[in-house]
Length: 278
Image (cartoon, rainbow, N blue to C red; front, side, top):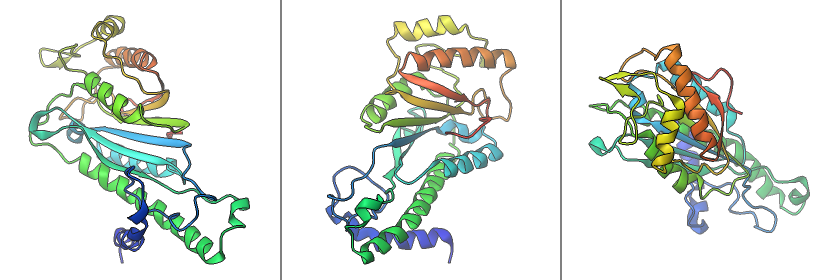
């Protein structure tokens, strides 16, 4: 039996746990529904938000996509909240949407384990491993769907989209640490500004471009998140990248942008990250 099938059957077997679930969306079947809240509550330590620009499906190499998935599987740990959000232009109904949102349970503390009957502990411990595999599978399926090519790829208004997503998704997060993985070419093309000229990428003046964002009052609020970027400078619908000079100016702009949007830019993939998401 294939792993995905096993995971699906696990989800079905656990579906009864949703009967008393809170209204907060969680696409991951719970392992802790039969354990008293006196001894267990979902943690709020880390939240990972994966933002995928669907236009990257036409330009991001397969090896980068594969390495990205491997990096995510290494990062996601018990107790983590994970959201996968895809966005693009408003053409072809490619609106922003949350594809997946879920949280993993965390192991019980040793003190609290002493108050739980052995049969419930055994079921809980066994469920944790299956639950983790389920989430990893769902993230993989979500990535695959987000990377399905559009019929007519268009440029994305990135700054406006990041403002909307950060306010609605990250602004409501109560996690102690928030991590954003942004998969995009980082090439803005909107009414605020454009990093193109005559249908070609141009060398931008980072300070001048930041002033445009400031004048338009379009900085975001990432709620003190750590940000990693993958895909910078990939020319849409090709396997080519912008020049080193253009790349340096892009990095200067986005570093300043995130600083003024209440975030820390920890990784700027050109197009790949040189180290794991941490």
